[in-house]
Image (cartoon, rainbow, N blue to C red; front, side, top):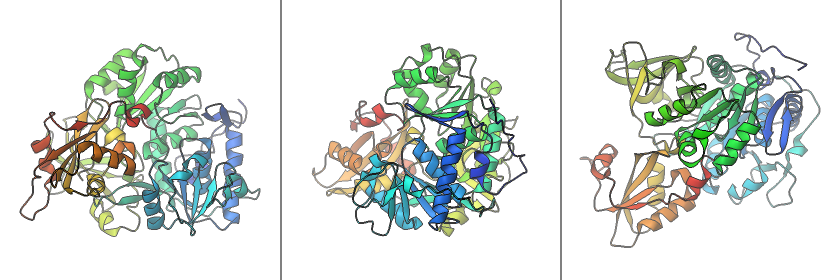
Length: 530
């Protein structure tokens, strides 16, 4: 290959991480593969720089919030990297979020420009006269101001950012149940990305199968790491047809598969994955929740020559906070490992001091990948970001060798299909139905989803049926937030203040009998992670 580029030194911050990520790849090497389209690094740089220059020409530069509503595609990549390179703040939004949630994000973050793939226009709320909409391809439709082609310019991109400037606002859920935006800087992304590239030993020869959505911090991290390494990404949108995905991994000579627990569970239980050769594969990455140990052992047995990395992360830590080296997988099975090279992880007790071996405490993280907190939310920022450290809310113990084992999760978040979900949001949607008195939501272990959502609902009379609750949730929520199991109950446990004690819900309603269980052939089960 010609035009081999040398990545900047670790201490050589250029100021704009968009330029850093595009600095390594050889111009004629493939950066992106999506269906029948391939994009080289030379083409990608040209497209990103032209888009960034066009944004700046229109006055969209440092600090402007630019929403992106798109599935995994070259359009998403150009929009995301171009926004960052221009000095804008990229705001990736799930394309299946629904009009109400998109509108809430637009209002909360002051978004005035949206980049939307044509097929996701239906996700937009009505009456958005205050927002300009740009699509991936030209389309004659109401509310559309033009396409990304109208935003391309030929001028030079002005450098207007530094490591401490915002690069992205990554959406997650806060403890109130409202959407939260984590403030991620250029320096956060560069530090976390370099650490991951180092411990995975990524090179230009690596190519990842990107089935995780790029709007999710784990998926975005795959984009960052493989671009920085000069490697490639095969862009997919979940595991709708697992066998076809496996065929593509073989045909495209994929070296790296990353997923949340359900990614590997679906492949193990609904495809020929364990029997495949996958001759180019050299590593698996798993994060986004606990993958049961029998699944890990099954994968390792089926692919003894492929390294399996178990990792732990949070959006508030840019992406990843720790990893378990593959050579320690056998003797430390179940551990999230130890902190990344630039990330310090501690497990502390109520007094803030590190716990002893075997004792349980909260995981605290510090390092250059720890983000600035939640956008315009000083209360939650002050609660979880203290003294430059991230208080994760996850409970863990440490063994004699310093390896960390999570034993519980704080903040009452659920993780179906690897997505972090607030139960308050689902409870609010259920409570919209006439006849619902109150609702409680909690997680139960599921061999495919990792954690499934169970809803217990108190109703008035017999006005509401379980199936009706599922239908209502499916119309209002992304599929991964729809309860897989709904039970009508007569009461919910409360404290002296009359508040539902969510911690008691699994004890009271955790048995596996009764209720209406979600259909295993539902769109969620068929669509996988898309």
